[in-house]
Image (cartoon, rainbow, N blue to C red; front, side, top):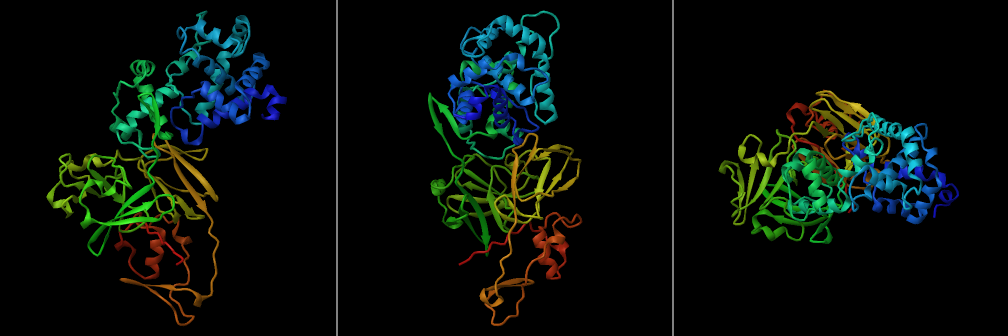
Length: 530
């Protein structure tokens, strides 16, 4: 048990408020609707975190006089007491209904505050409107959207002071509701940790989804306010861990362990299967040897029936990485169709290669045949930077964030406003950072400082770079062709073609080649110590 909490039970609301903030008001929620779900499960999780029992928790909140919680209190204490009200409201689900008297009975009951009804009413008259306004104002200031806000009620209506917890709990889907709804994610071939926009998510799910395994409660909420319920469902998907309940059995799927890469070498196509965590090559499958859809059974789960979509890799020239969608309309993609599939139509002129089992097709947004493979265009593009590992960039060379239209976004906890055509370069310190744009999954990047390792020139093999060719050679003298890379002047230049990575620019300049003639995307140098 947290000794400080035992000695100072007056801190119970502040500690609960801090836990609520970390759970529901994190940086990756900025700009989006937030639905704090304070139920028995959440309170038990809070108690476990602090090493106490739920009996201890109840004892502490009953020792803390509600008269000490007022609009002048520290905000975390206010947030904690609001959480306590939502907790009481969550206990109304299995009782007679969401009435004012029902809530007052719950908040005053022995398993919550254990106080007289009159004491609650006196406190509510003095402070309820004020602390909820503080809550709304704090959310607005920090970029969190609270749907279905309540405004103070004039007069002596019975639900004047209980409307806040009643309204904000009544239309919140609970954990069991959401785990049942997650079964629909699985049916639609969605997986945890996918970066799917809200628009594309509903294009897959369908806004008017209903299924027999939805509880009566969740069906009621969907019927009463579908728009609000759908917002909760999308927010739940963004942090979904793969758990779902199907026919009263809880199961779990995990995010993909492997990534497929399509590549062409000397007019020969093949597919690399790469382990995500380690970057290890698991298997290379020549395209000519592909026969049926089960070729990938061990390594890959189809996101669409009988087709695998590839988009250009941002990290490696000549590579195409498997993806659910292509994000930019101007980009081409490649689709790997099963030969016997009747689900898709393509132009014969777009066919690259065929086998008895598969057809490789070059696709673009110009054709109506391929529209379903393109996502709704994002208002932003993350490009450039010197990437040294997955989502990791060198200190001093982070990526650039380019906006196609005006948008509000957050870098860590700092709010920024873009304008159409704006390009943002970031002065980011070493460590991990988060970029959040409303309606999209947060972008997580890390900045690292790589200390130079100095070796004697004659100890290791070298790269020889020349126009039109490259070679690997062992020098016989101290003379060398590559002496190091100074990319600092290319990291943030604004007049260079955006298709070209700063490292590529450096190479082209050193070779005295016209930069404008090169259209390739980012390149990554991968150094292996054999």
